[in-house]
Length: 145
Image 1 (cartoon, rainbow, N blue to C red):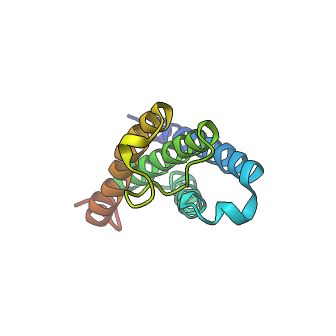
Image 2 (image 1 turned 30 degrees about the horizontal axis):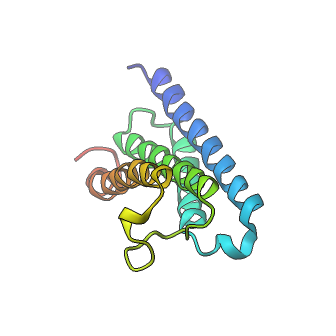
Image 3 (image 1 turned 90 degrees about the vertical axis):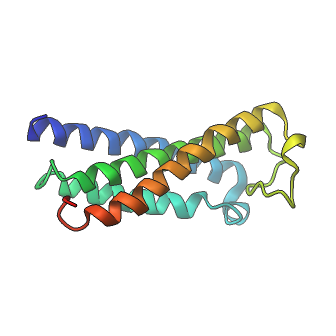
């Protein structure tokens, strides 16, 4: 892949991810307000994704072939997916708390829509975090092992 194609692809991934994350955050903010939104991990995770997305956007202009940028872009995309599925779950089933832990809700008692969205959110979000922690540290600072 050429340098300009890498740059365009990285920036497209970041732009699409940040649009999805922004829509998710705005939906949750309008629906629940600031008070209840602080119960969720979504705002914190989205701020991290926006920050790393900005790093990818700026750094891709100078080093579009840096492998670390691809890891950061993947993390931004998986974080946007996590935010979108969490938002969809909270809109479809508004009675559920934001954090679905076993001491709050037994997984078998979840409505079908919430169970499917939770099943879709957690593995992909965990993959992005694992990828960032593993390869992000291995590829830092210049994109080579």
